[in-house]
Length: 570
Image (cartoon, rainbow, N blue to C red; front, side):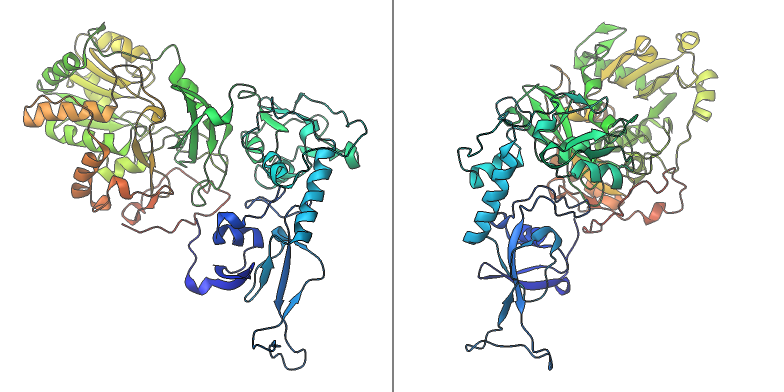
C-alpha cells in the first residue's frame, strides 16, 4: 500500500468530526481511511479503474471554507470559525477529491433519500435470484438493499427479460438480468487487460452487456471481471453453483505461477479448494491475477499425485525413507538438483545439506514468454530466495551443465532431485539405473519417480506454510489452506530430519515450527537478520536486493503498476 507521510495529508471535517486523510484522494478513499463506519456506498467505482460516476450511489454533500474574492482572506462566522460554502446539490464522492478544510456530510436525510431512490431503480428490473445467485454473501446490491431498499416493490409492471446464461468466453458466464451497467468489466478489459471486447448495446432498461461481434472474453485475465462485478451478473463457469461463499474458509497465499508472486486468497472447505481469487497488494499485483494461476490447485488433486513415502518403489514409513536416505548420503559422490519452486525455508535447509555432504549442486531455470502484466518470464516463484539463502550464487541455466556430465561419467553415485524430471533434462535414467541412486522430492509421478530409490512426496503451496521472495525482492508469506494427504509432511520437515541425522547423528522426525526455523534463518542469512516469521507483514517485506543488481534476470518490465510498497528495508 502507499505510504502517506504527515506532509501528504489534509484535515477535513466528516460529519462534524475532524480527520486527517491523504492529500488528493477522492472522498470514497478518504472515508476508508477515516473508518469502516464511514464507507460510502458505491457500485461503479473501483480504486484501480478510471472514474465514470454512472451509478450515482456515492452521493455526498461537500463544502469548503469561503474566501473573500478580492482579498483572498477567509470569511469567518461570528464564533470565529471559517464560514463553509456548501455545494447546492449532492456530488459523487468518486469524482470529488478532498482538500484542506473541506467539510463532508455522508448521511443526511436528503442523501439517504437519494440512495434509496437509486436502489429502488436498480431493483425495479433486477431478478429475485439471491437464493441461487453465486454472488450471494458478497453482493454489494444485496448489502445496500438491506440498508436502502424498501422491503417491497412499487413496480407493478412486468420485469424485463434478458439472457440468463450467455457464454462470454471459456471461463465467464453472463446473467444479463442481474447486470446493473456499472461498466467495471468494460473498463477493466480496456484499461488493464488491453483486450477491448466488452460493451453495452441497446438503450435504457433494455441495455445489455455483450461481446463485440466475432470476439469473446478469452484473455488470461478474464476472471478478474467476475471478481470486480458488484452483483452476480458475471460468474465463473468453473465455480458456478458449486458452493456458498459463507461456507468457505479464506486463507492468504501466493501464486506460484511466476516470479511476480501475486497475492491470493484460497477459498476452501473440508480439505477441498473451490476457488482462488486475488488479494490486494499495490506493490505486487494491485487487485488482479491471471486465470491460469487460479487453476493451479487442480494439480494437487491429480490422480498422478504421489501420496506415500517409498524405498525401492515399495511404500514405507517416513523413518524408513530417512534411514535409507542417510545411508545413501553418507556414501559420498553426491549430486543435488535444486528447485526455485521450493520455499525459502526449504532452500535454506537444502543448502546446509549440500555444504555438509560437499555435494555438486545445480538448479534449472524455467522460463516462458511474459505478458507484460502479471506473468513474468521466470516461471518459478522463488529464484531470489535461492540467491538470498546462498543455495546458488549465480543465475542458473535452462539446462544442466557440469552436473549432467558428472552423472553420465559415473562420478555421481547418489542424486537428490527436487521437482524436476530427469528425462526432460536429457538424462537417460534407464542406462544409469545401476550406477546412480536417485532420491526424489516431488508431488507428481514421472519417469524420475518411477526409477527413484527413495521418494519423498512434496506438498503443494496450499498444504504448508512458508515464504517466497518475488521478482522485486519482496519477502511474502503463504499459509496452509488445507490438510495434506495423511501421513505426509512438508519438505522442510523432511529436510530438518535428514539434517539432524547427518549433522547431529540424532533421530528427529517431527514438524518444525516456522518460528523455530526462522530463529535459525535470522541468525545466519545476511539479508534476513533480525527478521522473524511473526514479523513478516501480510503485504510482504521489501528486502535490499542491491547485492544482486548486476545479475541479468530474465524478467522484463512486466507490471502495469510500479511497485509502491514501502516497508522496512532489512
